Structures are given as C-alpha cells and as structure tokens.
Image 1 (cartoon, rainbow, N blue to C red):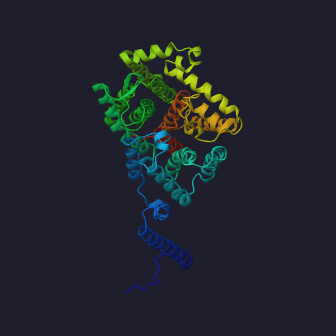
Image 2: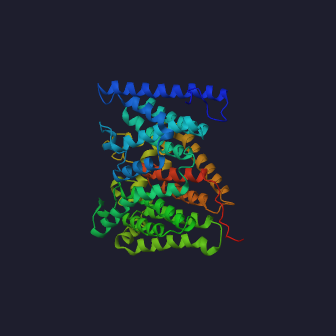
Image 3: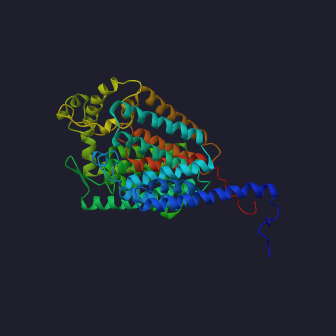
Length: 463
C-alpha cells in the first residue's frame, strides 16, 4: 500500500512542502468562488458576474485558447456592429460585442498574471488608455459613453496580450487561420451581395458589407485577410486552401467598393512583397496581385464611378456641408469642424471617445459622426501629447518589425509590416480602430509575428 506521504521519485522534501500549500490554496480559492457564484445566482444572474469574472481569470491558463478565440472572433464578425455607434452607445442591455470584449479582457488579465510576458508594456498602454478615458470623464461627466471607447481599445490590447502569453499556442500560422475562419463567412456573403446587387445603400450606391456594419470596415478586414492568406500560401506551405482564400477575400474587398480599403490592400501587398528577401520575381508577385485588383476595381461600373467622383473633389467644396457632394469632401468638412474642438484643449484633448459620443445639433450636424481619420480623432481626443505618443509607438513598432526581417525564412515580420502599413494608411481616411474586428485581426497578427521564433529551413535528406 502506498502511503499518503509518499513522494514521487526525484522530488525533494522541500519542494513537496512548497507545492502542497499552493495547491491547497488554489483548490480552496476555486471552491470559494464556486460557492459565492452559486449563492449569487440564487438572487440574480447579474450578481454572479464578479464571481464569474474571477473564475475566468483563475482558469485562464487552462482555457483552450485557439478554439476559444476562433469561436469568439467568428461570432464577433458574424454579429458585427460598431460598438461606438449611436445605437450601441445608448443600448441598455449588454450586447454580444460587449460580452466578447469582456471575455478578451478577463482572459488577458488571467494569462498576464500567470505568465507575465509583456507586463510593463501592457501596463503602460493600459494606463495610457485609462488616462485619456479619465480626461473624457473629467471634461464631460460620467456616463457609459465616456467609458465605452476606452474599454473597446483595451480589448484590442487584450487580444495582443493573449497572443503574447499563449506559450506558443498562437503561432503566426494559427493567427492567420483565426482571421481566415472568422472572416470567410462574411466574405462569401459580400460576394453574394455583389452578385445579387444587395448590401448597404450608401448615398444611392449599393455596396456589399457582408456581416459588417459598413463596407469600409468590411474592406479593411478583408484586406488583412488577403495579405495574411497570401503569406500563408507563399511562406507557410503553399496550400491550395490559402490560394482559394486569397481569391475569396480579394473578391470580397472589391465587392465593398471601398477606395480606402482597396488602397490599404495595395499598400499591404506592396510592403509585404517588397520587404520579403529573395528574387525580384518573388518580390513583385504580391505587388502584381495588388495592381490586378486595382484594375478589376476600376473595370466595374460602380468602381469607375467612385474613382471619377472622388478624384474630382476640391477642398473648396468642403467649406459648406451642403456642397460636400463626395465622401472625400465630407471628410474635409468633418475634419474642419473638429479642429476648433481640439483648440479648446490642445495638449490633452477632449478625452477618448468624445468625437463619437457628442450629440448633433442644428449648428453642427456632423457632431457624433465618426471622424473618418484616426489621426484627427486622436488629436481631438488625446491632444498633441496623445497623438505624439501614438505616432512614436507606430514608429518604434515598424522599426522593430523591420529589424526582425533579417535571417527569417518564414517572413513573419514582413507580413506584420504590411498589415501595419496598410492600417496606418487606412487611418488617414477611415475609422480603422473604431471597427473592432479590424483591430482584433491586426492585433493578433502583429503580436504573433513579434513573438514568432525564426523558422528553421528544411534540410534535404542525405545532405
């Protein structure tokens, strides 16, 4: 009979004594959380929320991360809604986006507490978001709208923290698969909308949006998926499924008829292709794909019409709201109305999320409408201090990725550079980070590329 006190071979008595209290403490904490949760559920399911949160944080290292993220991201895309829109801001019930947001944050906290990778950087970025959320509360009062944008951006950071602390569970190849799985249904729907002339009516133009709130948000997500799928085909096995997904996501991008999304895709493919080591033919393959897609976009009647209309925009037509008859002119007009708001608080801005939380008035009918420029948004919401820190962070991240290019055979940093450059360009004329799904896809790929280890080239047998 084996005694209860018997230890496994090779384990010293001191180690056994250290491990026992830790295991007992963890078991006691788990039992206590379950008891509190059961007691709270007897009153109301809302009372159990704190206990459930603590339970998720406690079991975070045991959560199967890849299946959990695949499910969460797929649901998020298929039920996509802009969490910063007026309707979402004034919703009284917790929607699906909010549940997934909280899940990402709690899972990230649990993994960060246990594995402690990137603690300092995560704390700095979270503090930055909390600081400018506090500025919004200080200037405009406490409300759900004032906290929503900060929480949403923290959830994007949380997804990067999850990938960073996944202990190799989220490789770049798996991050790409997650983006593909989550978006392929929306892409197929966008192609169907193009074929049946359905979708979203924007200023009299029918544009495919898949399951996304707006065609612009769909386009930039599809652009990331095209570039990621091309990387997976060229640098991760040349599988036919990846080649097919390049075609599907590229067709879906064109179906949105988003000029900003198409330009972002062109930059992503160009930066990824030109930064890859190898022959000129290999470098130009991605660039050639981008040019083919631009030609296909211009060959469609709606694509040609949009290019012609936007190219005829003049800054003078944006001086008066009624004269802004193109989307680019409307953007010029919106940015012009935001600059006086920035001048009221030039250093720290109005606070995170205030540009989309403001109420429209007869004098300023664009108030509360998204700025369609992330740099102008951060200038108004976080001032010169916030915008300078954002630009500095982008520069540091690009430099780090560029330096990681050398000596790698899987070109992970090249993919991340392309995605980052395309999103940075998209931010000049669109709400790149206000679309949560875009932020989630970019965060996954960037974090997975940063923690990726150099791939070892295969050695032929007998060599």
